[in-house]
Image 1: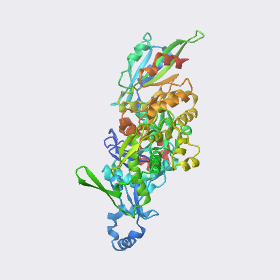
Image 2: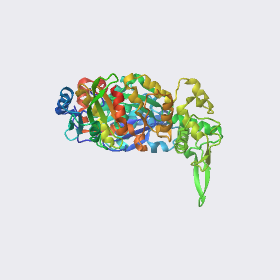
Image 3: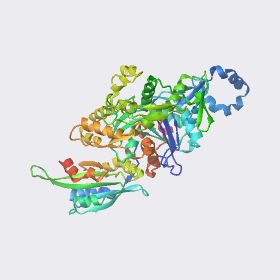
Image 4: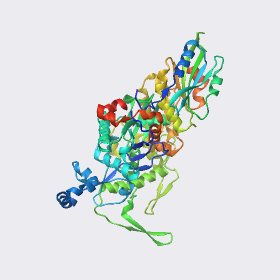
Length: 445
Length: 139
């Protein structure tokens, strides 16, 4: 049991696109930054410098521990975390993600992201605060133990709790039973929650999330001959009032992944500004004459976006559309089993016990950034009404407030961790020391 | 039992009054409330056996969450007098997120304490617990 009522807990939701971190009890996360990091291999650059340091100034090494901590593991590299560090272009800097399909593949990066959140954004000492981490619904026992180990051993946290994304979203909407449709950056997950437990066997996931749609949008723009200039590749000079001149800059040492990252930042903004889910199945001919919407790129070019406004979001509902997006054809060949959102919902519900299906149909919750797309809720509800059994009362719910929708997982965690009665639920350091790491599976099933 | 639950305790009175409702049929309904200060689920209101379903719904606040138990009498198609005990988690959309979280995360534990619930319902607006729905679920 952990009785730290006075010290506020820290809540972290590390998503595939953004990391949300902040103090429990607050309405929104204090720190929101990209989950990807910049990485520069240090091998060739500082080998000489490093050997000098190693031999000469061993006692001083404490000062540089932070930088070299990450270097100790297999590769020697320096990581740049946070929107600012990533916003600045550096030679040879690659952009890496710690997650693949929602699961951690690079713990070193995760470690750096946590460190950044604690020490640079929240300015706290992790030794003093219990941590509540949101985890994907289908996290493996090994992943959870690894998380607990890192938290207790490296950060020496006094207490820890792992809560499932879907459960937090469901609770935050006042339901212990719900079907949570979480469409985030890297993937879309449909997870049924019953009495506060995720029904693992019925969880459905698809790799189509916000980033995939961004990719489709970019390919589609490229096929029309539009190139998105990354922000670092030009300078905008005001030659006369209101008139700008664009000067291209050349940085030959920029990595391909960084260029792509910077382009995606822009395209993702285009997507968020203009896209909306079409009312019914996308049809090339019907949308051929939709009015154009304009969008001004950072370099001053103006784009006119027509049918793509509807076509791109419809990929979520109807993945076979991918075949008619130029440059994306290969994707559908390698992933033939991807289903649209309504099918995922119905399949997931049908895998659950008959007794709770009705309840799930009437409480479908939307969460995540991509699910905040305009008209997505209405469209999903309409598609489900057509395809669900007649007796079912379909109700798709989403918080009216975009902040709440985007951060529903974090907000759920924030409230849970701040409840007075929750304080006895923590997996404490003492328990970790007594029972070992596998005890996490019992404390936070 | 340690799931992502709030760890809320249940006042003994809840169980006692529920038993009376179930065995002696002393009450038509019971409304429960979470008292955050003492971290317990408490009995807020008891309904007499004569009170109707409308009287019961009128006891649920429009902007706050509650748990409730209702003893529903009905007649089946075969003219058989029956009754079923409903558990209702009332969590209106307009209530505060904190309150929704509190009630949702404490529900599983609380429900386990009340042995004999036959039908369970979660409602976020009055239409989700209308008489039609209650009837539909009872039969």
